Length: 329
Length: 217
Image (cartoon, rainbow over the protein chains, first blue to last red):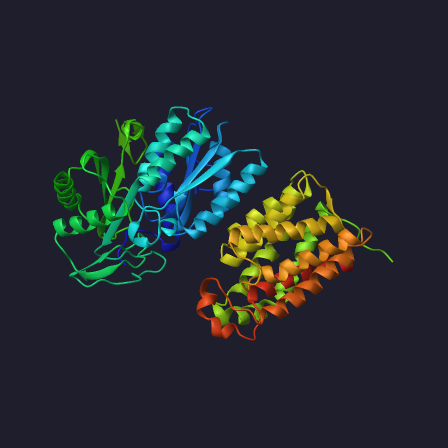
């Protein structure tokens, strides 16, 4: 293990201390718990959107807390769910009179804890709705799919809708529409190391890649010799469109996401390949997002997400957003 | 002879201390059963979670016994985030919800608590009776107590606590013949045969702790 840390067991809390000291004007924590991450100033009467999940995926999850996006985040340890109590404390803080949307990834531990927090909120008379991101096509049937980088489109659409002061059910509907229309395929070239473990929990040979691998190293659909960027793009787009067919003339947003250790240069190589394939198919790319949106610490690899758009979603995607980790004009 | 008629908010820490004592005594037994199927930490988890409850409860100041139990359940979940820890916590929270607005628990209240406890576990664990889980001890306990308070309104708190425990005991016995459907246990199906389910056994110890406390008062 080669990491710039103090003690492995302090990885999450030391990271959080750094974030609060750098961005204390925009975010804060409550309940004397660093892991209860909230916007510094809430907007009265706005639906609050809360996410949560394990550490190790920055800018996911807490990086999307800010203007035009989310209001709070329960922060778990590395690859672990935040507790129900942490989610509840965040909820109490950021709720602004219009109810709360819980928007997070489709993982068993997270579901249990968000559901528990929702029960506590309901007891306090706070209305909640929940929706999970489940965009990773290669992780199984739609209802059991893991949530990965495509959750960004749910955040963006729901966040923009909430910023328009829409109702809780309208914000939920915006998140739902993004969910229905988003698919992701990911692939890894190297594993990552959980600090407290000290070593990778799987290995890939120097010339190997893993197609379909999850952002916690969940096994993919094949491991084999690494392919070229255009071959990877072609296979990924085939898988995406196999699951969500798009007619020529459709409009989409594309997200090329790095998993942590793949260069931005490579992401743009991939992005160019995806753009060519889409042009061949007559699918119009309305907007492309390239960069690190959901990582797996220092894992090498990337994911490709597509989100099918209509005029309402275009408007929501184009709305401004500003957080310590994400800025869009 | 004096007999406990009501469990009040101020009694909860001692009641959970009693559950914690049973879990501590039986930690090795739970560990052995769990090791047949999974990682063997169930005894430690139950001991840790329930033994922490008295302190958690003493530091809460909710308006009624239901909210007190809900908040405490949520805090216990943070402490023991394993599957069984989460299911037990969910049960306590759900049971607490059924007692919202009440200042104490009588025989009928205990019945309502158990019924809602089962619902909480079912909802969170997505399990059903017969799946070889804690529900196979809690379900029969809830049923028999419900029958008792429905057909015999004069039944006392010690009587329902005893009945719940006995029904759970029989429920645990019945799990010896059940096949596991969930988690790691499903993978180790053969090891399950002839042994009681560890989750059901933990639930029986929970009801034993409550019964011991009520009868000691």
